[in-house]
Length: 52
Image 1 (tube, rainbow, N blue to C red):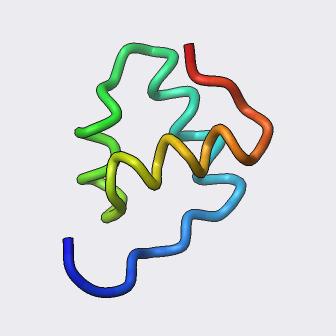
Image 2: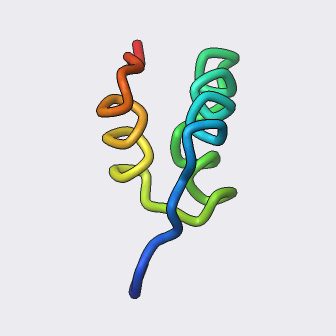
């Protein structure tokens, strides 16, 4: 993905975490919000949430 990626706010992070816990794939969610898979997982982890 080229260029600057979107900023994901705290509410979106919580929603994304809930989707991941419900079984959605990180790749699919990252595509939906327009960020890389790596950024999505690191952003959720650094905001105090743990992905299992």
